[in-house]
Length: 358
Image (cartoon, rainbow, N blue to C red; front, side):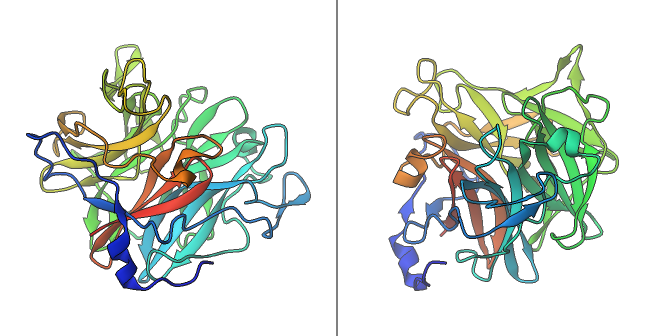
């Protein structure tokens, strides 16, 4: 762990918010966020932590290669970070598992020595081995149970899956989110929630739960129980809620970030995006991952009301520019903690950083 930095050091943090278009009203957006430059990255790979893999039947350094793309919740006055970690073993150059780290200030983390969620000799092995379990997104249900959406990867196909836990350590796997579509490529499930103090609780709209998902365009799915989901279709095609934009930072793909939130102005979703320079933002590198924000109608989650004209975070630090995948800020973990917003993100698919509202 890194040494404690005095709180006044926050004053030295560099902003990650570019100037918005002159006439754009950004009052509905979260922010501005400030990268914690004096502390970032807050989590890095470790070679000394080991884990006996029940599938490989061997001990592996489970977070030796990379740590990235975390989700986060507040529990008992602390921030819990559920993060993706890769080893260096196997034909896919690393299996992904989920580790857990805890912080009393949202900035300095102590991690558990072993992963809390991983491929096992269970019914999900066919979907999870040997690529692993990836990119968690955490919320709570009305009874305080944690609901996890995650991606299983068998080396060929990514599938959105669901699990639940009473304590973030002991998990029940509920299988594929889209059980009627087992061969559908699916990722990145951001369930619509309502903020209740520092918790984010899944909330029904018109008697159904809704989830934004996808890693090309953003699609929509519904559920009665948070476990079994049905993707929305437009005829024979998946219904696209919104898509990449020509000439913008999000010209190549869009993908949900953290959970969506019902707020006064509408349903707010922070989303990730990739730039394709020949059709997108000429000032950003080709393949650059940055994040924007979008607002939907509270009564109709498919209706876009507003969308940010530019990104609010983009790679500009060495650890964000160079790594397993270059030029990546991938936001995925958002908490409201000590009256501020903490947004955790993967940097170059290699490390984890945080940006905080002032």
